[in-house]
Image 1 (cartoon, helix red, strand yellow):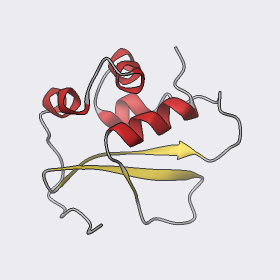
Image 2 (tube, one colour):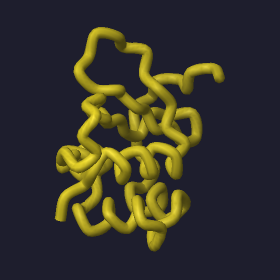
Image 3 (tube, helix red, strand yellow):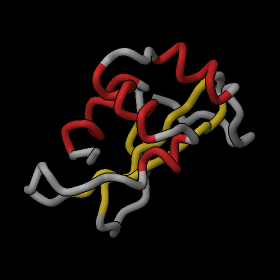
Image 4 (cartoon, rainbow, N blue to C red):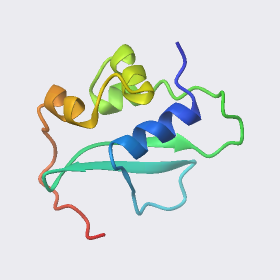
Length: 97
């Protein structure tokens, strides 16, 4: 089971991820905020190959590969994801939008 760039994009959109302001990286870094706390972040490779693996995402989201696939393909909702991880995160304030 491979997570593709398309899966990563769908996950970022579903979780309301915002771009991290950290330039010069090989990936587009996405941050997931919930309740004013940073709960996760992950990178999406910039390459044009959509089939290249993004298997680092489950670890960075704190869930299994199956749950990550479910998040990308709709069985898992945003609310279920935050309930699953207990919405734990850092105490950094959420950036203004």
